[in-house]
Length: 472
Image (tube, rainbow, N blue to C red; front, side):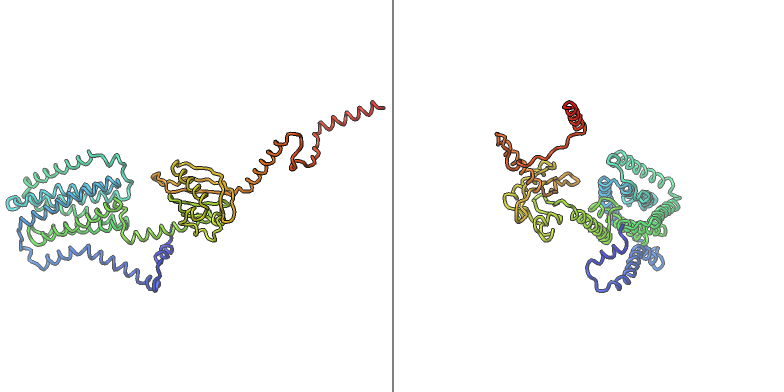
């Protein structure tokens, strides 16, 4: 695990003018960043407060056509983002995306009737109004449910492909549309209380979601967008509570809700373009930090691996599929009479070996990569001055998908062993070729006496004693 000092050192990979000054300013810039985010999240309610306290709330702007166009755009956006979120869920299996998809689908199917009944606003205001707060309550409840599953284990492919789950919820949303219409028609006298009650319930669900994010201290770029969108939805419900149909606050509440929807949908699009999961969408700062940590770990691992390779008595190398050396250890570099192991990197055997040996090595590498099997070879090698015999083991390198990435080889010098084997063969041939009992010069050495076994020595001694007694 990397410490803060390790991350700080990687942050300063490029020279800075004054590191101490940077460290002093950094907390202030972080505070300023958080203040900007807070102001951005609260800006809609500030605008609503200005209209509520300083503008005439009795002024109405009744424009059915504009309202229908706005709702139509929202429905098209809802259909599109529902599909994108669903595709992200199928790709990653993240549980939060499942519930987020349902929130978009439910909002679209219910909110669409709010726009459809716009022409009935004069005669059936309850039927026209109730679908709006119900759609916001539906979206808030599913978003909260999704938040509660944040960080949970991703669903299996079988569970993701359960189409019955989605059609069951779509049917439930359509039944909800019928229920809302029935309530709006039969309970029109109590519509003001019902509408405000639904808005308050939606507001409470959203506030619980915001509290959950702060309580869990979920710090990620996507969760920041999620938090801002929740803040916008909460402010939208709050403004709807104080607004009257067709007045300025009512129109502003629609704009705030649309802004929250766009912020959230932007995060989903970023997830679709990158990781396909809400919890794995990172900001540029987070990516830089993770890259810095990964780089530090990689450099440490590389140093450890280099230490192992350079202290090995074997000659070790790594090649790509084109036969270029990616890495060699010190033993192999010394064998090639190179002052530095990095001098071999990027070169091929044609650059370091005689042509005939280079072609042979290349053929061996190709054979290993094609067969995908290791190979043991006894072969000659040129070190820049003379020919050596080496014992080589070559094996292919495969990635996680099973594709060949190159070869790795291990060699040891067996020139001395080969010389001894050659001398023995020469001696054996010379001995077999002399068929008249005359030993070759190498074999004409005095035969050393061989000590007898104890039992045989005792037998000889007894025979000598008996012979001495008989002679007497």
